[in-house]
Length: 121
Image (tube, rainbow, N blue to C red; front, side, top):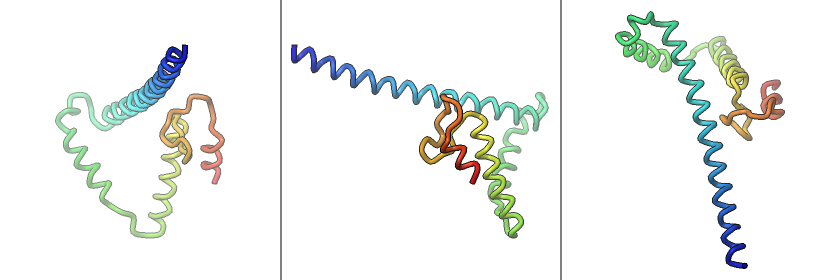
């Protein structure tokens, strides 16, 4: 009976670990699916369907150049901070946590008080 009890305990532990792995994989799958949809929408907006494949490398090069420029004035710096807040707000409304406790995880149970308090700062 003791051996059976220890095996059941081990099985329960393994089952819990598998449940956690499945949950993480589902969250990642959902996040990647949403990101993929958004990238497709951006690609459709920026490139007509017949030019999409030919100008993909050009748009990637342009995005790299845009990312390498840094704001130089105080006004540019404040707009960069505003953009960061806007990005976090967008992520939250897309269903992801932005708080330091669960950052990047999918929100499955409605609003998060940690995230909301962070947005209100």
